[in-house]
Length: 115
Image (cartoon, rainbow, N blue to C red):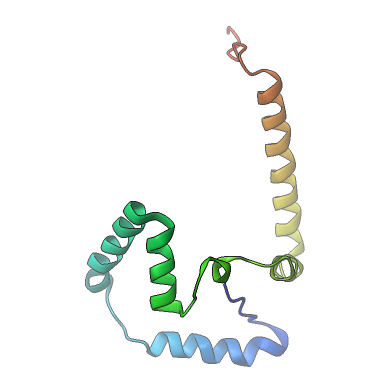
């Protein structure tokens, strides 16, 4: 995965990358949808092997390590995330953990409360 900064020092490079992507072609959805559907079906059927084939074909990524996001990349992405979004994600993660913990404690019990 490649993180593209759209602000600060990376803004010019981001603009160039976006322009290059836009110049790739103005294919309509109807034109690309059959190919997209084939790729999705292939990945569903072939799993990681198919995914790695497409990652190499389209992105030049070779091997499963190319798909891994490093701790540094994750930390950098988190630091560049809006503070309000960070707070919302943190709150959501806390709520999910609490719910999962309650589920584990109550496993096997009837969780429905008569109303």
